[in-house]
Length: 537
Image: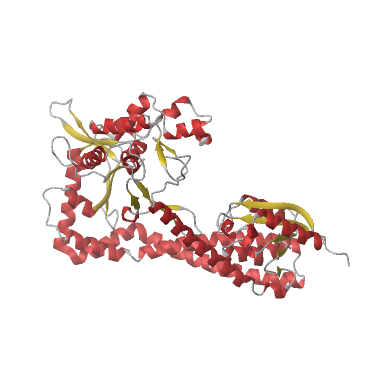
């Protein structure tokens, strides 16, 4: 019988955490071990696939994906790694490759240090347990890294990819910031304008009109970063300031010499997507570097930002602040007063449209119109609670159900179908393996069907998870409505609106652009989303 020729992939991986373990896991050590093993056992090396600096919990690695592509194209029939953890530290995905993907593609897999060889059934008995241990290791390392980050952050060190605008990294002291004399004036200008009572939107326009360079453009000019944004962009891109950028600078404590950390975190040690943390969980260290702005000026600006949200120059309270949104772009509506009229009137308009860049449309609505409509709707619901509380719960459930009931029924039906299909595919896989072993199905057909069903399995798993979450949310509706009714009972029927009342009962108010009917009358839709229960009007 002619011996099998093994066209072999040598897969090498090293993460930043693995580097802590010393030379034993280095790329050079892995290469030396794998090449020696391949030569001693007469394996034909096709290529080396190296992912240097990539975590084992994530399989979105460039060289790993290239190796998988070469397997699917028939270039490789053997994969060798130093140990199982080099392949991966996510035991579910690692097991899927070892137990499903590799067998489906007739790949011999060898992990030298663990004594694993897919051609030797006895060597594979403990493979699942080793994969679980590798994942626990990754989880433990993740905790240790977080503790190390916290320790150095609590010491006031700055380890961001870039220094904030107005600063540069100290070349002689890692984690320390120095004032950048070439750009500090930009920060000073922004705060000076804010202290004059100028809002973020107008400051952004002033900076753009005066062609003040943005932080991104400066980094591109100095270090070549963000080339994908600026390399072929028109010249005005270098000075395109946004309201959000100005606001973030005005609220950034870095400029008074403080270091603030732990604003964001990963979802988990497996899922590296970032989520924002509440402010009470931030780590703040004061006086870690030289300030550009005095603490007195900074606090004055914070007070002006807060007051601008609520109180106008004439002393009146801006009660809708943070609640009124554009129904089309989602931006907040800006409050303004038309003083050109004989009797000046207040109104709202889309803040994105107000930047004058031709984005979105006005969504103009008079303050008194919005006020009257919202007050009337709240008065209506207050009266309903007082007169028909028992019937109101059922009515609101039906009202919400009118839009959601069919969706829930559809979701339940789709979930049942997806779970049934998932069970069918599990059964199909079992029969396919039997057919493959007994020779009733060819290797080519087995591989083709295996790929097809694995793809369907992944799609079904995502769909089932999404549908289950959707149905779980539905069971919360009754409790949410009861809570809202209980909340609204705490207030007497209002004769006027206050910021406290609005924020307690309303989540957001969407204002649509106005249109005209056949008779030329102005028509405008307003959607009120109440806290916990959403849109019920």
